[in-house]
Each structure stands twice: as C-alpha cells, then as structure tokens.
Amino acid sequence: MVLEDNECDSVFETQITEEHVETHYGNVHCIMTGTPKANLPVVLTFHDVGLNHKSCFEPLFNHEDMQEIIRHLPVCHIEAPGQHEGAKTLHNEFSYPSMDQLSEAVPAVLKHFGLCRVIGLGVGAGAYILAKFALNHPDMVDGLVLININPSAEGIMDSVASKLTGWTHTLPETVIPHLFGKDEIETNHDLIATYRHHITTTMNQSNVSQFFRSYNSRNALEVERPVPGGSINVRTLKCSTLLIVGDNSPAVEAVVDCNSKLDPTKTTLLKMADCGGLPQVDQPAKVIEALKYFIQGMGYLSSASMTRLRSRTASGSSVSSFDGSRSRAHTNELQRARTHSRGAEEKRGRSHTDVSMECGSNSEQIASKSNQVSC
View 1 (cartoon, rainbow, N blue to C red):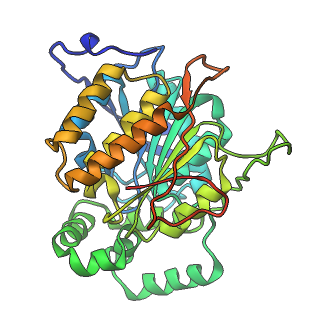
View 2: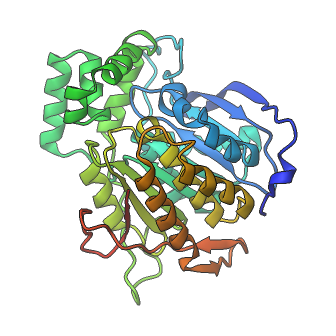
C-alpha cells in the first residue's frame, strides 16, 4: 500500500505508548510511536551496546526529513533488559539473555502491540539481534536496515583481549572503541565526551556490562550466499536488506564480510564517506535519504514525498553534515538504482527494488560483485 502525502498532511500528532513487555527472557522496555495499521509494517529499532533508544536513534528520528517516514509508518523502539534510562541493577539471579534469546524476545513484543510485519532498523548488537530474528521469522520481516552489523562470532584472541580490557579499563573506555573508530576517538573529542558521559551517568553500568558480555559471546549468524542453480534451502536473509557503515567505523570489515555472505539480489551495502562509527548520529540526513528510497522500493512511500526529498536535498536545505555536491550525486545515484529494476514480489504483491550500482573509483571493490554504494 502506497500512502499519498495528502493522507498525512493534516495536523500530525504522534501517539506515544511506553511499556515494559514481559518475555521469556526478561522484561524489555518498549516505546511505541504512532498507531499500528493492519496493512502497514512498523519500523522496529534495536540499539547497540552502551546505548538506549534515545542515544542511538534520537538524532535520526528528530531530524526534520524523518518526519515523512514517521507520518507514514509507526515506530517501535525495543531496549534490551536493563538498558533503559533509570534502569535498576538486574537481580543477581537474573541470567542475562544471549543474543539468540533476545532475538526470540522480539515476537513477544510484536504480539503485545498487535504487530504483524516490521521493517527492522538495528545498530551493532541490535543489528545482529534483528538479523537473527529475520532468519528465524522471515514472514514477519519486510526489510532490514542494519548498521555496523558483525555476523561473526568473536574469535578466541578477541575474546581474551576483551576480558583483559574489561579487567584493566572502566566500562566507558571499553564500550567507546566498540562504537567509534580510532581516528574519531582521537579527533572528535566533544562527541566522545558526550557518549562517555552518557554511559557513565545515564546507563546502569552493571547492566551494560552484562549486555556487552552477551554480545561478545554471540554465535555466528550462519548465513550463506545463495549460488545460482544451487540449493533453494540455503539459510540467508529473505527480505530486502540495506547494510550501512561509516568508512571510519570499527565495523567496516565486519559489514563488508556480512555483505559477502548475503543474497546480492536483495542486499545493498552503503559505505558512507567521512563518517564515523554511528552514521545515524554523524550524518542523519544521508541515512534518512537512503531509508526513504529503501522504504519506497517496498511500496510504502509515495513518489510525491520522494520528489520533495530530491528537491530539498539538491538545495542543501536539509543537509548539515556533508557537502551539497556529494549529496546531489548520491541522490541521483540512488534514484537511478531505484528505477534500475522493479519486479513483482509474489508473496506480498508489492513492488520490489533490486539495487545494482557501480562503485566509485575510491570505493572498495567487493570480489563477489555485491551491490555497493559509496557516498
């Protein structure tokens, strides 16, 4: 179903519901924005380690360009047990859920709010959890936007290094290198100080430590790239997937590795130039631009709203963190990709965008000829 803008241009008041949802793996704090509709998916977010829904997603969802998406689609934020603001220290007898268990807590949240289908938006640990959820419940996921995903289990050496770091460093000094790249830590002192202060004063550090240990103990996603003419039962993500990473992120190699393991006809890698570890915080306007084309490709945004997006992007009025010429080039590239191939998706009967783009001369070439955009 495509929503036209005149359906939502009246006075827009967002209904917000905040609840603790009981699951088999502990209570999760959820924030539901908007009213779910039977014929529309919900944007479902899951945060990274050391963050909650505010520190992870607020710069993105508070951006003026994001309002077009919010008017069209409800949003549900999930926070892992004990990761919300003001959370009390989890009881000693509470066994913190694994990443696999957290992914199985998601269906309980959807059932609680009466949600049938979602477009997942996850960062880091949250991206892993939503990808695992999509693998196990493909019928409930229309699309995935995964930022800084690492599909691999932590290696033995990395595990030992993590334990040594945990013994010799404070929690903020352990989490910060997970969120931000070395150059960013050394040069963007204000940003790092902000997030260090957030981890120290807003988050319950005992709970964060447990979440971080759970993430570092994750299993590999065990996804396999389909081979033409090969088995149709290959375990892979069935939905349209957009992978996003900043070129200065500590997760670059992991995201590129994930891209090489997914179906190239359904997956696009967006590598953002001059961008740090949290693209949705560093360059929210560019992430929103990609989100809008991604969602429109699934048939949920009208061409009228996209026209306004192109107009504003070209004028530079909504761009604060990257130069106009690069933004215009990126917009045109995405528009060409959007029209490159559109086929009927048998399962839902909506249009599906299969993106295929040539990388720029300075972009890293993927040996497997996966779709990659550098901007």
